[in-house]
Image (tube, rainbow, N blue to C red; front, side):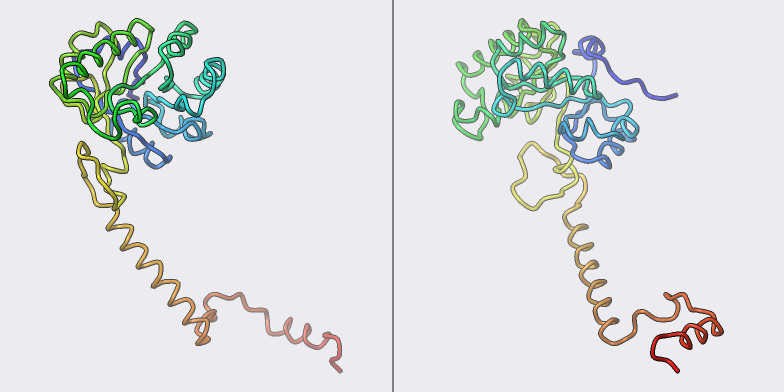
Length: 268
């Protein structure tokens, strides 16, 4: 039996009952792998969720997409963009904009996911790329922000790099707002990691909250070495006259070849 895709109502009903799994993905291959692995929720770029084959490979993934407030424009722009994305396969849209924008979208029945804690599009307001909520004042401000998002009609918030004790207390006080944890502990409603971190695809800084399950970077290095070796062997074969050999060519019938040559211009 095919797995059923979660709905907005399902996510609200599951609050406090089980942890959802969530990935940030970027390719059709990652989407297909998330589908096969039984992942619940994905965040993905608009160009992926609107790809003609996306729902073919990922029919049951609850898919959130969108843009930051720095990219999306006015709330009217947000609404037009959100409506288009949902019509083309998305289940929810991400919005890092104002509370007024979130409420505006929610009133038009757009499932909105917002963001608290370390919000990359707003790091200047919270002191840079660092944990948020380590003081009592900050923690209470986060609670107030989540309560406001719940009142505004958001279905969920990503809660990023917040102390787990704080995130858990906030989550317990939300009636229906789902908290999706990225580095904020297991007391929330979903655990969210980037596929590239899980797969160890890059050699740069690895976020503290990410767990590497595979070493794709080493595999990519191995494949690149094999790619260079294959290209080098091809060049050498060409230079030495070893390629192309007869096995890679289609020969002409001898009689036809003789007739061809006999009729070439300048042949007597």
